[in-house]
Amino acid sequence: MKKILIILLIPILVIILYLVAPKGKDNTIILEDMLEQSDDILKEAEKVELEENTPLTLIPNEKDEDYYIDLYQSLHNYYRLIPKIDENVINPLFWIKKAENPYDLLMDLDQINEFNKKNYEYCENLFDITSYSEVIDGQKLKSLINDISSVPKNTRYNNDKKYTYSDYQLLLGNLNIDKIKDINPVKYGVTVRRTQMRTFPTKQVSYSKPNNFDFDLFVETAIYPCEPLVVLHESTDKEWYFVHMYNYYGWVAKKDIAIGDKEKILQYINSNDFLMVIGRQYELNLDNETITFDMGSKIPFKSQENGQYKIIIPKRDSNGNLYLEEVLINQSDKLYLGYLPYNVANIIIQSFEFHGEPYGWGGMNNTRDCSALVMDIYRTFGIKLPRNASQQGRNSYGLFITPDNLAPGMPIYMPSHTMIYLGEYQGEHYAIHNFSGFYRNGKYQRIMATLVTPLSIKNSQGKTYYQLLYNGRLFILTE
Image (cartoon, rainbow, N blue to C red; front, top):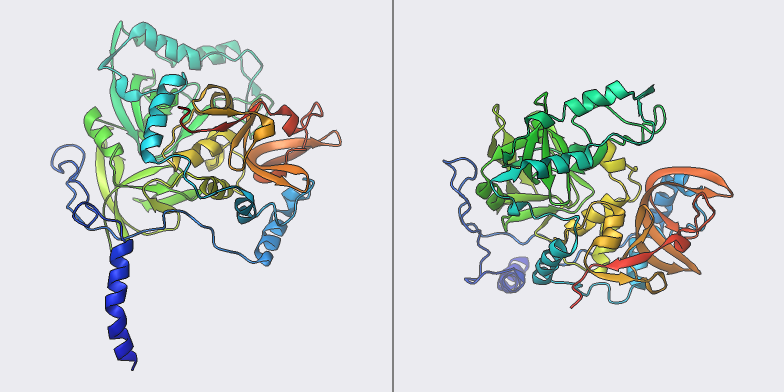
């Protein structure tokens, strides 16, 4: 009897699988041939039929009340400091269910591409690195370097030692300004691991107070693997490159960048066949090294078979040049095939991936700060935003929303800080954000983590975060 039932069910299952599977013009998903293996960069990808990976909308698994009680207790050292927190407010499903039409698309992929195009035109903090010619004018290059690599006006410390005039002269000397010519060649590169973009070409730290380890002010931002860069200059000690990425420029260690042909790099990076990191981080152990991909990282891949992906990883040879390596990995719930659907539910789900993560100024300590949290969430949808909070809140294209018209999932902005708005509950506004701390009864409460808080928490002047908001943002086409 069991055998008969199985035989009867087989054609039904085949029909169901056929109907739900994503299809190309010939009813299969086909990978386009990539680039040739024999020349510098890409290996030819055979045409393969891809397996279905994940649903079009992420829906978090329903968890019982005990899960959130346990989570609340595990973060007790943080949440004991924050008023008006219970198991509901740390549950993403609680906020999704309160939102209006949370699974409706805010923009489809074509609209997102148009949004990015408009944002590049609208926002002075975003850069189309493909627009660089083969050379750069010397004065323009000097202006870029001097803009980022300027001597701080306030007192700074290298650990517990105060920076002196001679210390800064050494740092300025390593900028290699004297070697900049009237016309300078432009190169292209790709990051081969998670790295830092720094103010000066140095590993030396810069603290506003002695041994203020949480805030190295020479750190500008983290850069994730597989990020294309324009390489404009080299430091005097030949250990650093001055580079330009899509939303920042500064100094990056040479060992973390592989140089290659512009067109082949862009063809590799812009492949339509990629995995998106949707977990907080995805780690790949390769050649005795752990390569960390943060949320929003794109990993090009060649094929999918038997529950595994053959991804294509950038590597740096002994001469600093780029070559690509194919690596077989297992499917993971931290990876998604293509971009996530851009809707309120996914914004909230992605924000809670960082729940409890330590704060990391500029991406220090393998984590992130408030504006990187927002930027990384939006990268999973294919949306490119500026790096810093004020640039996102004031300079980016999209709708500007007044604080009295906020909706769940919106990034919200106050001076020097950004959060993801969750909604109202028992007369309070709530947000999830990565922050260093707040004031309660006039005393500073050190947090240094991503948590849910009411917007009634206060700053050093006694103003609530809600009072400090200057706008929310809805990153959609405005016309």
